[in-house]
Length: 420
Image (tube, rainbow, N blue to C red; front, top):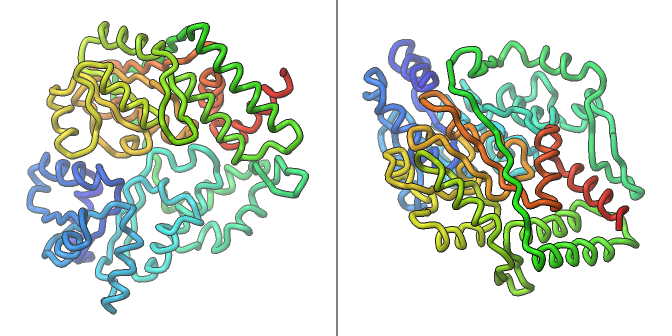
């Protein structure tokens, strides 16, 4: 609402802006910006065109007369290339990036595309609740889009040299982890202070509490044996080689699958092993005083829960968001990567269950904030289902340490292998 109000003021009171492009996660682009404008009387006159859907639909929306054009971040590259192929000048003198943290990778095509047209943008705004959830390294690309490299430099290598040191180097010389030098946080924030504003919800809003709970699940004996067998064999296979991010991720993925109740075979088919977490989820739903939002990790989790939980429904479209907020969906299933950013789901319920935890601290924080946000009337209850004696517990520990990074995965596997 604040950003829309600023856009309207710049367009119709100050005449500083003619066209604004909003870049957002897909579901936020489909629903949140237009719905937010409709909520406020002073914003209802803003004309919003959604540059979404098929190429033909996007092109038509792009050439519709409007004030704001909303595009999903996956189509940023398409948009830049399309306008270039038509030899059309960049038409947006203002750009708003909703969830700026999704542009934190300097190697991503969306970042490179946006950087090319940055000189043609008069005003740019980035919105995020997690600017550096995993590392201060994330700030280089984000701030670089805002100021065209003025404050943190044009090259990420020089940024690394100035503010970080190598903390973990493999025998082959690959740096797996950088840590900030002493005073780096203060130095970086001082450089970007003039173009940033930080507003914490607890300083401005009276939100109900977020109450986090852990529900430990005991795996059946057969499942325990399968887990131990997979852990032992997979880790022993790595005994004569350096554990890398690639093979570490594969092992942890397999262990997490078993913790959740299944495992994918070589052909990608899911084999059910147990329903311990499903039974625990059913108990939470039974005791909840309203709808429950469930975050899952694997596609098989969602497919299984739709069969096992009456009324469970995946979040796919704008109509699903509306149905949830209207209280018509008792159990909403979604992945933190697709629904963890920008969506307003607080009207639909106040209970969250993590069926399978994510390694990404950013996704974890953002996902919980879908319910714990302005407009929430009740304390938000966050339940984490953990299979005892499995990697689940270590994922949660890394999240609590705010160290949910690639290095944490590697550390866990090395520690586990040492005990075999």
